Length: 179
Image (cartoon, rainbow, N blue to C red; front, side):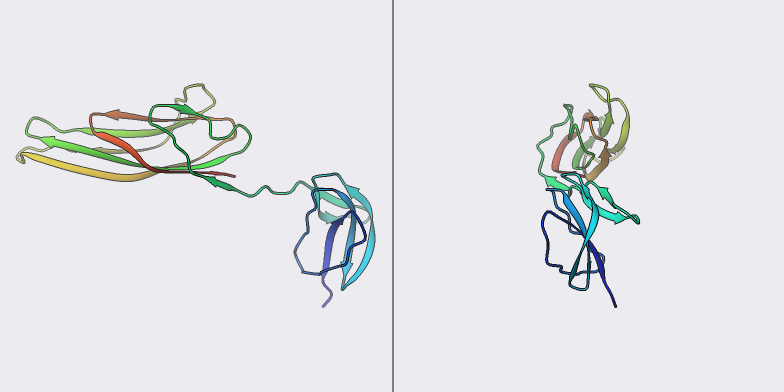
């Protein structure tokens, strides 16, 4: 079976044919076809920072390389505005712990809303988590809920984790993956 691989080259390459794999080059340069282990010069070039993603009858189809996702540990706080990335979407996950206590005199509630939009202080609720309890006979009841809120924040959008209620609320873990 004849495997064909399109490569981006800046000089005459030796061909390592691996079917279905494109070899990107951030330097740009002449494109070529590898058939078996023979090098066949092509027509045209891709600009610097692009790679050959296909061909037409006379020239390559050039594409920008896909930038890999990068994870980072963040240190976000409740009730503060932040922008995860000005230029790329970010998948955010924040694990929230809400501890509410109920006594004979009443219960507690706690809620965290993940808000995100282009406003300086975001108002659009994208997801939320809450905990509430009340009792009628028990002297004291403590209820703890741990749950995650996740959202893909578009590039340039602001985020705010809004907490409300009398319960004890904290962020126990957080992750942001730039896509």
